Length: 206
Image 1 (tube, rainbow, N blue to C red):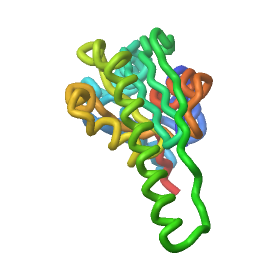
Image 2: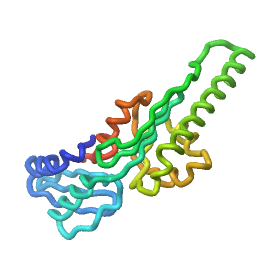
Image 3: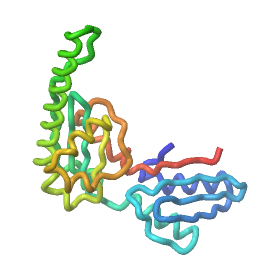
Image 4: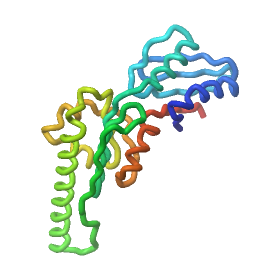
């Protein structure tokens, strides 16, 4: 499960209310909670490392401050038929570009026809990824030095193909988790990504 950044404080209070006095320990990438009744939860720190803190109250405060800190984030969403890139300052989308490409779907044809079809489809996908790389070079690359992270989503192989462009080496070095699960990229999908990449992922002790 995950909790939006703005609801984290309420979520921590709720855990304490349900499970009693809570101890919290942390390292750079994870906060562990233990309730008085033995209940446990592990919170993955987005954009690690988490600053060190002395005690449980300080750990919680440090996590809340870390999670809600405004950041400059580049976003790259790619699938075969569309891509979307954006620059976020906090939750605000300050620069973006969304585009689509024609890539044929699958076919049931066999033999040589299927092989020709597969080559044509692969060439169309390659051209689509080249267009996405061009968009990254125009929109994201000039601001890459400002990014706290580059967050990607869509199709793993498609994203890898785009970031393999030699022009985007600096940008690729900023790539961080999480990888976002999204449908075909559209502007509204891009606009909604901060809720995913700023969320805190929580694992509960079953």
